[in-house]
Length: 260
Image 1 (cartoon, rainbow, N blue to C red):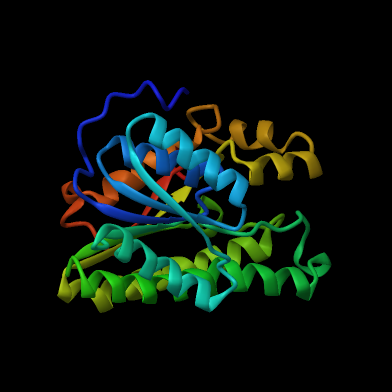
Image 2: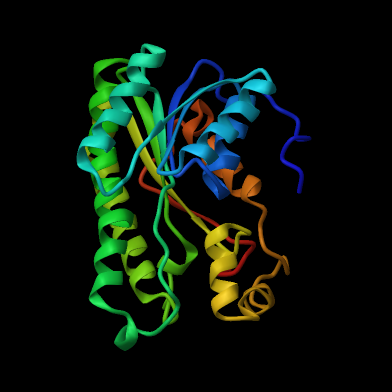
């Protein structure tokens, strides 16, 4: 699916948004979509060359985008990213916490502590820190807003081939729900999306390590195919928009019916 040909509606007009993991995959697709829908976006990730390329693409289309390096395993960098967004745009209305680390496929008993520790630090502690920093920036500027975390359909069922990844994403679902309860009274919504099989670099790495996995996953999916990252980004855009004003504490499956 070509995400440059979609009709835009001004869904995010006037919003200032932070995106983690924005250099590729779902994050890059979201950055492009959010900008086309009227948002000013700060893209963050660890890879400057890719960030610069996506930012240049957005600007070439007439969008407003900046980028900053940010490692989700670095508490100071996470706080600085939220502060930078508020400084650049004069406010922060929301954030899409999409950055994540994958794991080599394998069962629990062959997944080392080093893998478990990395996936914990990036996929759970990273969003934990990011939400705290983002809420502080939203409170200090826009006052109210929305945060969306990227979970996974693999967090909603047994995930024997990616047990560390699935476990941390399931924990992220709980964190999302807890944050929604905490920040809802002050008008800050917190939700998550749970993508199914999506054509990202993480999926291609899994396919390279376990040939045939995409075909197997597609066979379990009623729509019979993997998602383009832009299709997942659409769900995040809606949840960040005012059209989702009464939605919080939700983990939305974007999985082609895999868990139907």
